[in-house]
Image (cartoon, rainbow, N blue to C red; front, side):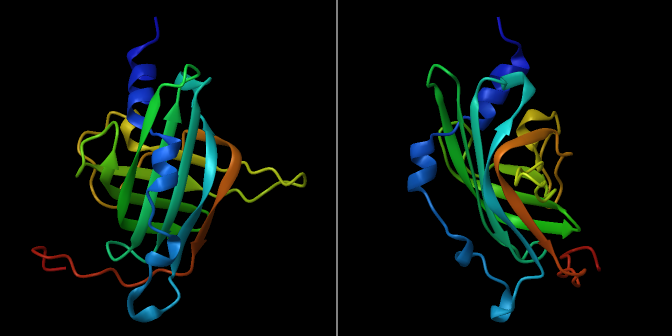
Length: 186
């Protein structure tokens, strides 16, 4: 019998590659204000190794650009077990924070076979570049496999999953002025 963590990992990431392939908002749809080059950007598609679901086919695609809560883009996740069961979701980015090779993305689910539409998810990415053989050693973390409670904008867990194919690119140019926070006086 598999543990609840494996079941929730499969359920949580459960995405259909067909769904991911047919649902789309391109990276170009996620633009910075006034047509400026975005200071922060995360893009790429990667196969993921996650120990509780080691035999499963898990794929993340991220296309996000912009700063803080002005960021836009999509996060798509597909997850299939060896018997072919699985599913997926797509979420619209509502925050991006990046620094060095690390980025945090939050997004609100718009289409899903496994999560409630309207739920916020969080993803963290570590862009390690490539080694001499051209292999990526990037890492990724996601909120639905960690007991975080309600996900807050711009917050994500550590990068606990290893990239086994493909990879992510994180671009972090400086630290922009954050947008005004309503109701806080900041």
